[in-house]
Amino acid sequence: VTDLGLPGTYDGDGNADIIIAKLNAGTGAKIWARQIGGAGSQFCNAVTMDANGRVYAAGTYNGVLDLGTGLLPDGGTTTYASSVLGIWVAEMDSADGHTIVAKSYSDNIGKTADKGVAVDSTGAVAVTGNLRNHVAFGGTTLTSAGGTDGFLVKLSGSDLSTLWARRWGDTTNQEAHGVAFSSVNDIVVVGFMNGTVAGLGASALTSAGSSDAYGAQFNGADGTSVRAANYGDSLGQVA
Image 1 (spheres, rainbow, N blue to C red):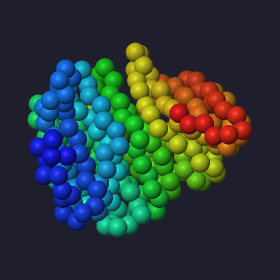
Image 2: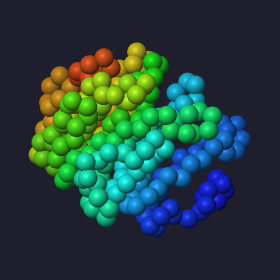
Image 3: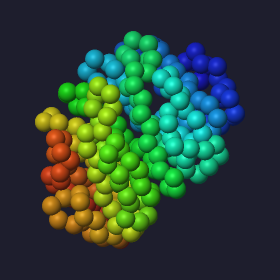
C-alpha cells in the first residue's frame, strides 16, 4: 500500500489493519488515505459517500480500535485474539478523512459482522450484516433465532445514534450482504436465506434448497417490511 503513501507495514502486532482511501474520480489520484490499527485485527467491510463527499465506513474488529476519536468501548468482549468481533461505524471528513464520529457495537459470544453501508438524501445511515447471539443498537437488543440472522439498523447522520434496528431469521443461517436507499429513502437489502424466514416481507419466505438469494424492501421511517422475494433452486444462491 505504499502507493497510497502509507507505511506498507502492519501497525503494532502484525494483524490486519484498516485502510480507507479517497481517490479522484477522474484520475484515480489519492486525495487522502488512512491506515488504522492496533492490538488485534481490524477490518473495513463497506464504504460509501454522501452527496458532499463525506465518507461513511463500517467494519469489524477484535482487540482495540481508535478511529481518531478515542478508544471505542466494547465492554471488554472483543479481546485480543478472541473469536468475538465487534462492529464499528464511522463518519469521516470529505477533505482529509479525519473521523468526525465513530460508534461500536458488540456481543459477548458470537461473530456479528456488518457487510454493507448506505447513506440517504437526508444524511441518515443504514448498516446491514449478520448477527450471532445478540447485539445492542442503542436501546434495541437484537437476538438471533439460531445460527446467523440478518440485521438492518438505521442511524442518525449527525451522531450515528440508533433510529431503529431489526433482524430476521430462524434456526438455520441467514445473511445480509448489501444495502441501498431508494429514491424515496426506503431501504433495500440483499443476501441469502435458508429455511423459512418471517420478517422480510408480508408473508414468510421459504428457501427452495440449500440457500436462496433474497431481496427485501423496508420502510425507511420505521423499518417495517414493505415487500420481499427469494430466488433459488435445490442448489445454493447468494445475492
